[in-house]
Structures are given as C-alpha cells and as structure tokens.
Image 1 (cartoon, helix red, strand yellow):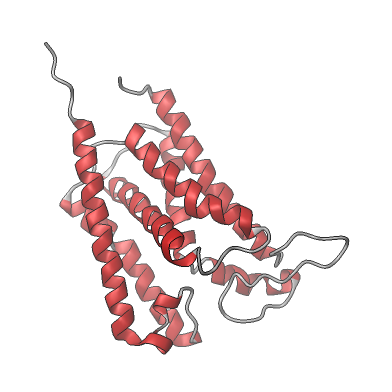
Image 2 (tube, rainbow, N blue to C red):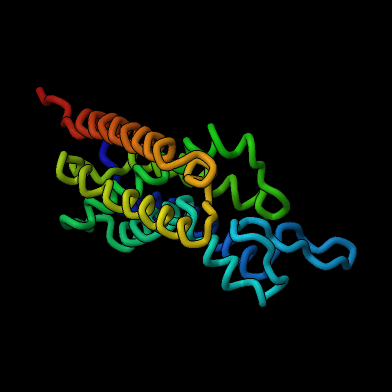
Length: 235
C-alpha cells in the first residue's frame, strides 16, 4: 500500500529534525566550548572536539572550534541530510536532476558516517560530556532514520549510473579539502587521513577503499530501490 503524501511528509520531517538537532547540539557545544555541563558551579571544560590543539575558552575560541567542527565528514553528511529532507518535507513531490543527485548523496554520506564511526572511530574515541548526547544522534539515530525512511518513503527510481557517479563528487571534494587543509595546518580530523603519520600511499588506499565500499552500498540501495519500485501484478 502506497504512503500518502502527508505520511511521507511526516517521515521526511522526522528525518530532517534528527539531522538538525544533532548538528545544532554540536554547534552549541563548540560555540561555547562545552564538553561537560556545569557541575556545582565549576567552569565548563574547554572542548577538545576539534583538532588544531588547545582553544581559548568560551566564545573567544568559538571561531576556531567551529571551523574545526565543520571540517568533519559527519557534519557534512548531517547538513546534506538536513537540507534534502527539509526540502522533501516542504514538498514531498520535489524532483529535479540536481536534487536527485543530492538525495543519493545524503543517503550515501550518512551511511558512510554511521558505518565508519560505529566500526572504527566510536570504539576508540568515545564521546565525552554533552557529546554523549549529540554523537549518538549524529552517528546512529540519523543514519538509521535516513536509510529506513528511504526504504519506506523513497523517492523511488532516482538511482542511475550517472546519478551515483555525480553523488560521489561531494565526498571527493571533502577528501581534497581535508588533505589540502591538513597540508597547511599539519592536522587532520581523522587518523586515517593523517599523511604525516602514515603517508599518502596509506591514505590513498584507505580513501579508495571507502570509495569502493560506497559504490557497493550505492549498488545495494539501487537494487533495493528497483525491487521496491516494482508494482505488484494485478489480476
């Protein structure tokens, strides 16, 4: 039974809300330099979420902390999901060549975020303080919601070789941005990007591995999408 437009709109809205809540919480934590909430009147602990070193406390260190925050792939994926799902919430019938690409982008990027964090990063770098609330929303709740709502509500029939190839452009831009920025500041948001410690060959192999895995995931989603798009035969 096909979902009504209003039902799809509600699902898209829930998905958008999850992305914006996770992003908003991280932004506020970094804006004010908080990792842990106030405890018995003690001053808040300066955030170590970023990767350029020690920050000035409070608002004085906000620009540097926020710049670091928005250099994480997690944040890029949250923004992609937030924008795409908000637009679908406003108009569940929205379509367009570029919008189809960004819809696929949002699904692939948030899938990579969820898988890489929960398998590689989370066990080694558990969140601290207030990030114990924002991190599960960003790395578990939003990825699961995004995939589940895609399976339930679509939109359908948007996967193609051309669209998947175009959807890989944003992640590739992120890789170049991270390596370029890292070459300047000698710091990287994730260990597997650290060419200073591991060299470009290791980083390139790892990135290509993630890219290849993303293509496989896109193929899986494409196959599922085609199966769900088939109309049941009528007597």
